[in-house]
Length: 280
Image (cartoon, rainbow, N blue to C red; front, side, top):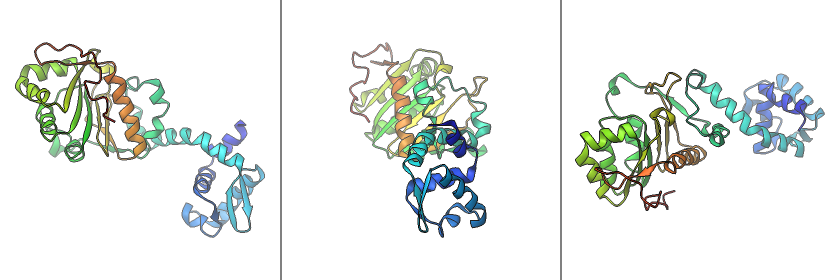
């Protein structure tokens, strides 16, 4: 695809939005201005330019993408989604450690499009994330990774296990040591449930995200800042594409973690999936 055509799409918000709109379905000229929330007069020059470049076709009052236009939009959409992610929350992404996201998933960061940035509230300063409680306790399957330790994690994990939620939990070595030391009995109760398994990531706690949480219908992602601190900010997303992305990120670290046999002498199971290989 010629750089000229890519620039035609990227360097004009109106042209970009028009092409993305027509990628959904052909549109009548009378409805396009309202859908894009721009005037017809300001729209017409962009339609003219896109027609000249062979990116859109006109049939009476109806406009649609040409084959070239369809290819351009399909190729450019991942880049546009990625740019949109950083633009929507530039103050967040600009200060995050992104090396905990493997390259193949970093290339697909646009899959997190539509994420809400949630800030820690004063009333919840010492509570577990309210969104974690709301979106995970009624889920049938959950994947949770904690690089840090929160004193409510053990009781929350036990609640999930008691509800027969298919749960996989990854802890950093430091956070597991807290669990096995200060909350040993709770950890044993979690492991006694056949539907829950615990993993330990032996690398440094800053090598992994601060939080990965994936349920049937929600993704929570927390990343350390560039100074290695977790500020309680995290992204919440309900889109299927983002859930699949979060699941892949969790599985990436699960496959590099050890499955715990007991709270006293953790060592890896032969099966890295801990008997829950069907958890999807």
